[in-house]
Image (cartoon, rainbow over all chains, first blue to last red; front, side, top):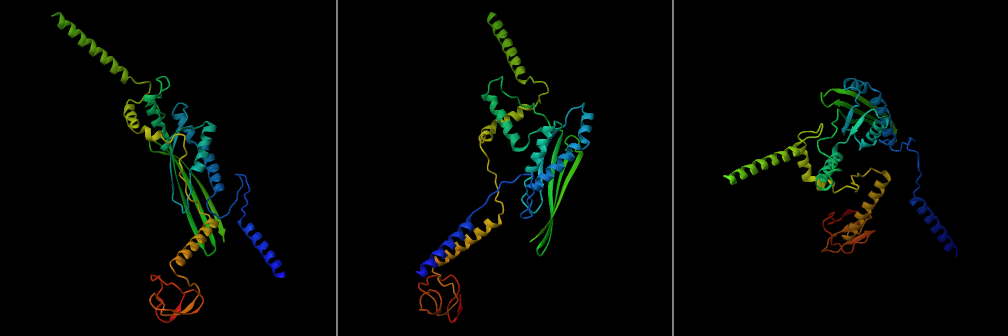
Amino acid sequence: MKFNRILTVAALAASTFFAASCSRQVTRVSTDQTIDVSGNWNNSDSRMAAEELTGKILGAAWIDTHQTEHQGKKPVVIVGFVQNKSHEHIDAETFLKDIESTFIQTQKVRLVQGGKKREELRAEKADQQTNATVSSMKQFGLENGADYILQGSINSIVDSHKRQKVVYYQVNLELTNIQTNEVVWIGEKKIAKYVKN
Amino acid sequence: MKTKIIIAALAVLGGLYSGVASAQQTALLADQNPRYRESQAKYARGADSLTSLQGTTIQDTYKAYDWYEAKLERRRQNREWRHQERMNGYFDYAPSWGLYDNYYSPSINFGFGNRWGHGYRGGRSRIGIGFGW
């Protein structure tokens, strides 16, 4: 009888332990909230990079210079590649899209599509040549040519000893005049983290 | 003579018509790139494959490192490895004393572990007297 009671209590304790260890709790948080868990590149870093680089690129003199030289026309920008040379997987698209979005919202800079999306656009246009009505068919050779290309790189330095680590990230973006190859703007965002295990 | 005049007039008219038609084809819109036909021909060839993914989501994902998931995966792999070892007839996990332990000769076993059915001969050498685990 006593043994049975002990067995029941033990079974209950074991089941509670397993239930507690297997349960997963998920809490929604604000995307503006900074939560550092592992010390790796995270959404806060991406957000900070986007905010700082957007402010810098839109506040720089190259827009006014371009408008002065081109009878008030807005500069047309294409986004090139960003090279990740850091020790982590970092997708630059998260902060580049924020920058592109601000370009369009502020109406200071015009954007043209590049890369695979441009390929798809041209393929769609080619498809229209034989399938769409003449009045709705889009013509080749009438795209907006970009004046500038935005390119970038991500670098990192890791300094670690025993349980301590300092990680440094540097995100660089640069804008180059496609006609003259002249670099008209360079911006960087530097992030340093101290991680102790 | 009359027939020749008619033929010549037809030839002139045909030439004029084809000239007008080709002029219409090559007429450029305002500011249109004069080499637009090159791009058109290039994309006309691959248009089908390039537009075939329209309306779909291209899965270009990567596996992010998750410490907890990695730990579970390690445990799962270890469990699988031990299971495979057991299936290969490798039964003893605990240290045990053994004598002449191979398939052809009987084994004297002191300690823990089941030593029956040793068909597996690719692992640790267990011939002779020694301490094996």
